[in-house]
Length: 179
Image 1 (tube, rainbow, N blue to C red):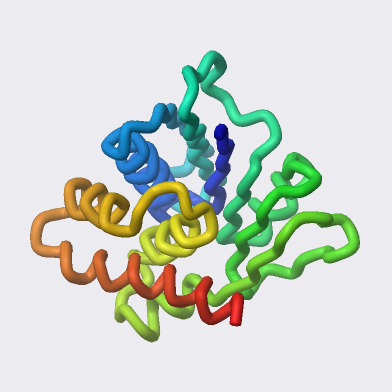
Image 2 (cartoon, rainbow, N blue to C red):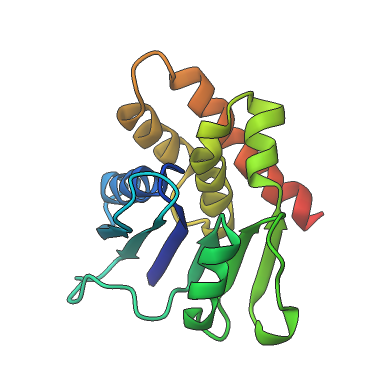
């Protein structure tokens, strides 16, 4: 079992933190994980991506070549990275993104990540954690409680309940999408 993931969007959306949390949860679940990141020169609004590889075996190369799962929170990140997605890969996008369904052969989850963060959790800044809940549900390799513990360990003190709600709402989004 080896999964390569790319979480993409714009700077300020917290995707690097989400990648760190995902890698930490995997390691705490006795899996191997490596996390890398890159972002544009702008602090906010520039391109941003976090890459995570999770494996039962040793990881020999830390970069994601062909993601098994691609998360896109902006149209720009979708346009740039969708071509890299594995043929049978999983695409999770915010529902505001226009998708070319003819070019994707894997599973597509177009879900209201940012809207859920705003309307159901009350803060747009937790869209990254909503996305993380969705990713955890789709992958199914790290138990929810393990992911929740990693979130609580990494988020600012006093925001644990808010972020737990965001994680739960992300998992609910995927379950509702699958119904």
